Amino acid sequence: MATTTLPARAARRSAAARRRDRSATFAFWVLMSPMVVGLLLFTVIPIVWGLLLSFTDARSQITVGDWIGFENYQWVLGQQEFLRSLRTILVFTVFIVPLTFAVSLGLALLVDRAGWGRGIFRTAFFIPTAISYVVASLVWKLGLFNSLPYGVANLGLSNFGIDPIVWIGPGDIPWYWVVLVTVRLWLQVGFYMIIFIAGLQEIPKDLYESAFVDGGRPGWTTFRTITLPLLRNTSIAVIVLSLINAFQAFDEFYNVLGGGSFASGGNLSLARPPLVWLYQTAFGGQEYGRGSAGAFILTALIIAVTLIQGRVLGFGRSSAEK
Image 1: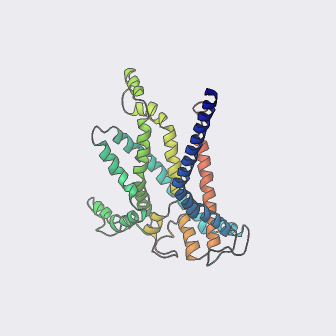
Image 2: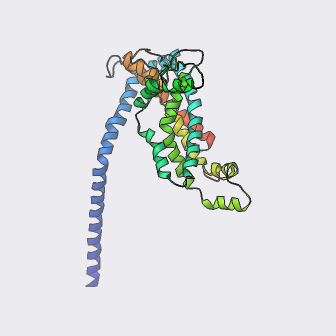
Image 3: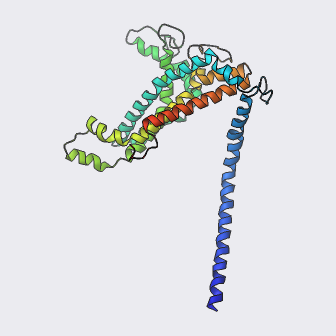
């Protein structure tokens, strides 16, 4: 009797386990299907369609037309304006990446050591991350750096006897870089500060206590010997992410320097990044095939720079390899 009961119980348990697995699988796909459908509709299909457009003579419409191979890619790489836009974004990257790293790390150190109100400071510095780049760019352009005597920046300079500065426009000194860099810095520094705070909280406090016992002093010594080395992976992640975001700059350039038209309106000719040039080419000139080709060239450039940077900085290596 026992020999017949045990197999029956095992069979029932196996059937129940299979039902639970099927239920779990069904629930998984029910919960994941909206994300999968959205990913296909708004990411995968547009990427594939854009790739197809880049090999066709698509003009005035986003339908696949005559296949012309790599002619669009050759045309984009042969445009001096596109090459100039790459130099523009390199200049922007040289300024914004080190500043973002230094300011976000400094804020993270200050907030992490705050005795009270730590959550308030984190929230205050993180709030700009939720603000639209378009809104912030227009505030910077129309309120802070509007080149008029009653602009906030010029009002502050007038207290020191300095004449109003034309912040956005041609001149001997490219003051517009101050506007572009500060608005991006204000918008993103809180996000990277949170990343650094997470990294700081992972450092064992025993290391600092041991250093103090051995005669170490809080400040630059412990920062150089303990904090910064143990923030290596966090620092690499911040540098890589900020570099990728810098190469994707669009809103601040278009809204601060642009005149609101597809053509080279306003002061866009002063500093036009690749995405603005591609936007004007695709939607202003209705050269959708060429615009798509330029987008994939920029994507390949971002991937290449990211891989090289990760290789140089040692991102992804094990502790033994470092």
